[in-house]
Amino acid sequence: MFDFITILFLVALFIIWKMFKVVPMRENWVKERLGKFAGVLQPGFHFFLPFLDRVAYRHEMREQVIDIPSQRCITRDNVEVEVDGLVYLKVMDPEKASYGIGNYYKAATDLAQTTMRSEVGKLDLDDTFKERDRINEKIVQEIDKASEAWGIKFLRYEIRKIEPSPGMIDTLEKQMEAERQKRAEITLALAHKEARINVSEGERQEAINISEGEKIKRINEAEGRSQEITLIANATAEGIRLIAEAIKKPGGQIAVRMRVVQQYIEELGNILRRSKISIVPAGLANLRGFFEGLGSVGSAIADVTEAPNVSTAPKAGKK
Image 1 (spheres, rainbow, N blue to C red):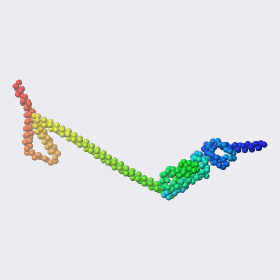
Image 2: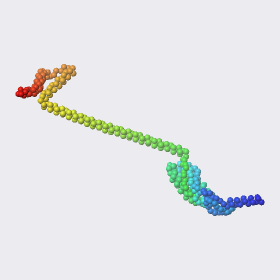
Image 3: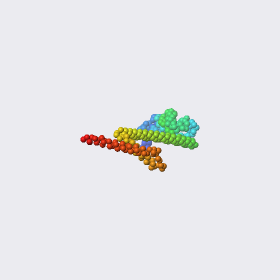
């Protein structure tokens, strides 16, 4: 009796377990009743008819990532490259994802590979590296059109790797090395050109500065000489004026003659002292007349100096 009750309890527990289902938040379930689609179960608590209803499919409603296996593609310029990528998709309609296609994972992978081969074949090797974003966008558009009946939304495609064959890699490396060498030579040439330009500009500026300095120096020297000449001329003119005024005074002409005689004697003495040959002046025969003239000059000077005393003497006698 106890065993029968236990069996009944277990059967009832099994029936209850089959009657009630709890769908997780991240999933949607597809329910079938007697093998026929009976609805999509949203997250939460649901009631099932035992032995009549069953969960046919469970779909992940979050965004999913599918790793696309690596494959070899031929570019438009007949270069073999190995390409792989990632597909991001999301289930939008669980019913279509369940009955519209058998396995959307495999279908998405195969469709992404074929579309990738098609798009890479339209481009040259250089364009496949430069236009990755455009390729990704084009692949998503093509896959999304085909997958509309599957209840799947392809969000984006990302190319993860584009790798040429080993021989092509070696060729590309040599090409890149040649390009770097070319850029280095161009850079060195431009640097040498700029250096020569800078040197020539410096020499030009130096020459200009030197010429400007020389010009200013000459102007200053000329102004200095002009001022010097002006001062000397003014001083000479002033001296001549003073001499002329002195000559106009009484005894001035006699003093001039005495000064000329004195300079003549001094210069003649200097000539006789420095010369190794005895020099006799051409007018030596007239030397007597010269000294007589000198004596008359002395007498005249004496008369001039005594003249004031003579003029004042009669005035004293009258007193």
